Image (cartoon, rainbow over all chains, first blue to last red; front, side, top):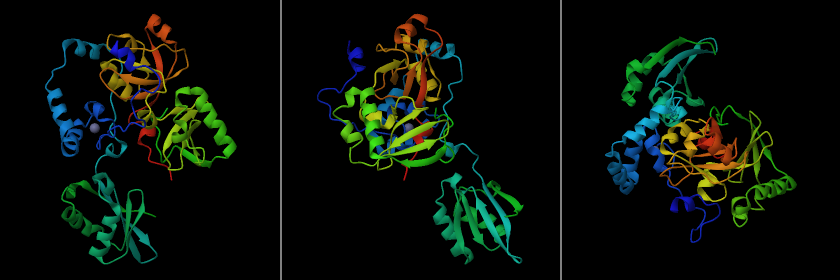
Length: 178
Length: 182
Ligand SMILES: [Zn+2]
């Protein structure tokens, strides 16, 4: 009967609304749904850091092996039931650099893809400006334009500054028209 | 509804509402969800300036002055709460509970199939066809989706085949991920 009451419509006595639901910092869902997120490991890391008591509960729950019945249920259903991770993480992690003409003699360097590594673009633009002693600004969703032709230097400078970006992950798009 | 929704591409404009329109939306919402009676003044304060975000596919999202998404609808249909709002006030929609095995399908945006609502882990509360419902899950406290019944619950139990509830909004879809609108 308790289950029936659970679904009863209308405010519950003794409950103060609004209810504050705890959302996961990784998958953004209520933490009870983290186990369904494809990147559950990151959720667990987040839980361990921010909600250690909840993390302990999860650890215990993980040791339960699914019952045979549950496995059977899963197989019977059609469709794939694949849950997508956040959009941001969908694309491959890669940085692209290219050169574009600016006026007749000068060039600028365009850097895209830094945000696929969760790098703050404003900080990055400032860093490039200081490093190359030239203008550098965030010009788009994931685009930085550096005033000057520094494309070749970037292959050393970027991995140096952000070790997670290997030189092989930087794609040279050559010369682009603006 | 929001499976392919992207806040950068799917929004076509933001409208400031006239107070008369605002009033009529409030009364429509109250008609649909009478249990909100004592709470609507907090959710949509009378003096607050709401806006409507117009999106592709005839979707409209009602936001409060802080830019938080509160309700949405498609093609002038019934206003439905966002999951973030429903989590705060989980009592005003009839609830339907799916079994554990259905959770990952619902979270991938699939419609809710009748067997997922009739198996031992599931539980239904009686409603008619075309009712806006909260999708709960076996062993979980919070709603994971908001849907609209395509059959009455009586028929869902009787027919027990095919789609029973259309999945309109689920955790981590485009609406869930939408940031407050400024
Ligand atoms: Zn999570």
